[in-house]
Length: 290
Ligand SMILES: Cc1cc2nc3c(=O)[nH]c(=O)nc-3n(C[C@H](O)[C@H](O)[C@H](O)COP(=O)(O)OP(=O)(O)OC[C@H]3O[C@@H](n4cnc5c(N)ncnc54)[C@H](O)[C@@H]3O)c2cc1C
Image (cartoon, rainbow, N blue to C red):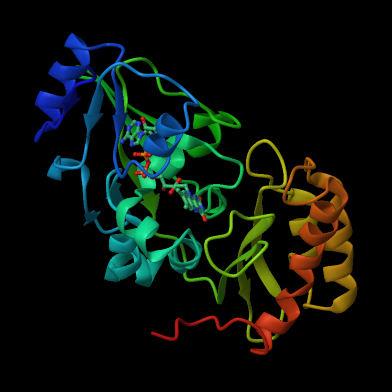
């Protein structure tokens, strides 16, 4: 019969992993338990991370913020430090799954799952998140781009856990935006998503701009060329159209039950065109309503 271990400290966790090397850990279980029940994989024993307080919460160290891997999406949405410094992440978390999924699911589970549709990934790429990976005796920091190796593949070594996510506070952007196109408004896995951060000067010149797309390739897609045609210029329909064309070239979408590759390609560019409306205040608000 399968055993479920419920350690309360990291030290206990590492001892359990050492004695049960084939065990699988889970945090909220919204990915792992679903896959287990549907027979997508078989596992020996399970290890719950749910009671390990050291892996939860947000720590503000001034220039840097550390997020415990087992912090739930709901806890992050409600956290004042995350709201203040990383609105693009909060916007993505707000459209991740349903309230129940956000209450159970964790940022660490979303990252380790490495799904091309994972909603936290495009913002974490833009924010250049580093991941603290730990074993009983070692700790290393890996950039998110190096951690995600492909759909469902990551850089975790056997016996290693994702302990914390490190974010550096960035200069305040005028616009932090996340938009997800899905088949319906709630509980939809994205067909394509765009995370965007921009700074626009008083004179209307874009001084900084970064984009990243989810569900548009095997991992998160970025496009320096699209950013370059916008940076240093006033926002205009013409430059946004150019950027959208470059984005459509950069993405590497697949066709699946949710959408064709061509539809994903078109939408990836179209999402950039909405920036004009967002800056004029006619689209999604830059500030949070609540
Ligand atoms: C109905 C439904 C709707 C969903 N909608 C969305 C959605 O809109 N957007 C989206 O992005 N996702 C969605 N998901 C997927 C899922 O809810 C999220 O990916 C969630 O963040 C996973 O977190 P978790 O803590 O539940 O992961 P778990 O299921 O606990 O774990 C997932 C994987 O990560 C590993 N893991 C977890 N924590 C750690 C750690 N600290 N160190 C090492 N390995 C770890 C586990 O071993 C497992 O392999 C949905 C799932 C369901 C069932």
